Image 1 (cartoon, helix red, strand yellow):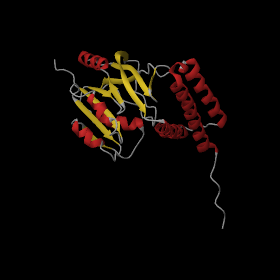
Image 2 (tube, helix red, strand yellow):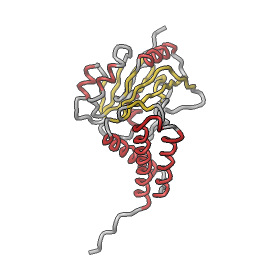
Image 3 (cartoon, one colour):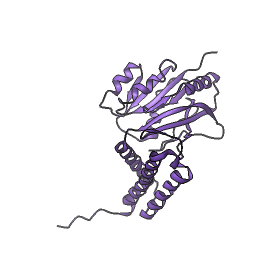
Image 4 (cartoon, helix red, strand yellow):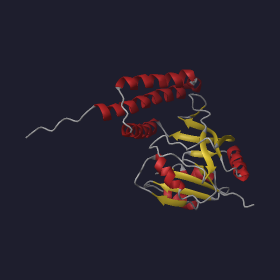
Length: 262
């Protein structure tokens, strides 16, 4: 039997800081690297070329889900393994992925734990670990949904999910400013998506959800065991939660001033 082939698929923009270190963890054991860029102005393409990646461009950003679907349309391999540029594959996870692909199960989606490094520490609590993500599956079996943000792999009752051994290391934020910029983008996309669905919000909803977010992360999910980083992450997450509900409220419950009649 022919050995099943494996592709790494990525969507990127201005990832020169992380991309080389990421691709080094998959170099030599994957058959294809497919990268869909959304308009990088740094050395992202040059780094991709070093690893002989198949580099495609779609600068008209359609949202995370649609962009991933477009990227997958360029994949030719039997299996697709999704990576973000700020992630690294550990040796244990590499071994698990290779074994899973060799089994060539047609209706199984594979998930594995993601361990995030945040503000100088690996976060083991806050509800962040094990952050199991569905990232490996037969290319023809499924794809991501079309959500603008927080996109997910589409599943149904005919598919089985198995958990692989090994962690995916995630260097998620460079600093607090990076967190705020990134979370603001997510909040905007979330509010836009909800607005299109006819949803509404209020300031009180934002406050309630923000408080609930902090209590869940810091107390219920034992974020206090992650030290000062756990406290900071819980506070920032509560802030981000409030912002997305406030954004939706501004979009749907407020209006622009009327132009003065001349």
